[in-house]
Length: 118
Image (cartoon, rainbow, N blue to C red; front, side, top):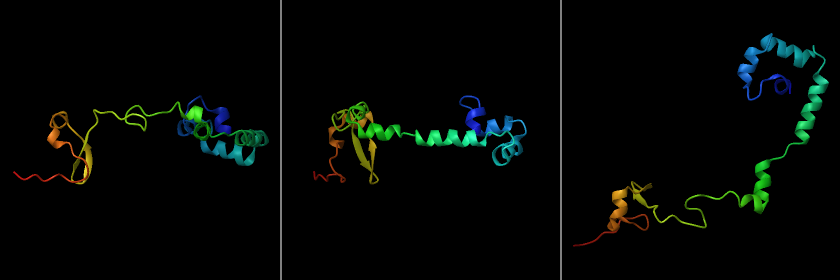
């Protein structure tokens, strides 16, 4: 909470500590020795923060209206992009190249390449 109270907006902890007058020693004095007499206030701030915490993503998952705002753009459950084509190569799928998409004999269904006799 001391960091939150004294750091610049969006400042990371390492640069904040480097710029803190007195460095880590001063931080120890503030937190452990309470040289500024603010530890009770810092503890109260932390308690308020912890008690007010809400997981925003959990709220989205539990609210169907909010969840409906997050849908896939391509190939989600409701629509399949017909331009997407995957081929099996070395037991792994990979996207087909434009040339492969144009050749219908390469369009595979399943994990094995069909064998054709002449």
